[in-house]
Length: 158
Image (cartoon, rainbow, N blue to C red):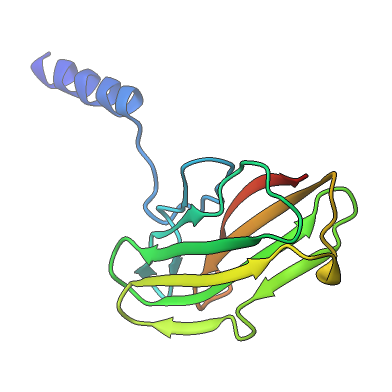
């Protein structure tokens, strides 16, 4: 009887606190906070990638002003940050005005990489007043079994 009671307690604990396969693929897209994927792996290595957009923010911008770009990419398991990409595109028609870095393959083995840039929101590269834009940052690992972590935010231009 004691064995049955212990089994029921363990089963209840597993249901209450959750039990997941450590290889579970989770693709997270969110518009605030950070984008993470605790299960992404390649060749048996867990990367636990994270994306954090430090700037820009989601406040309105003014046409022809400079916008700072700063995004932190990391592997929470201190593994290599393999690939990153930053895009800015028009929400209404998907016209892309920014896509960096030109070589998305980093192989930064420190487990942490900060991308920095400054962009003038000019009409010469497609920005215009009264439009809404999507800022997208993503990181992914080396293998085809490695889903990307995507973080987005929206901002408008006045």
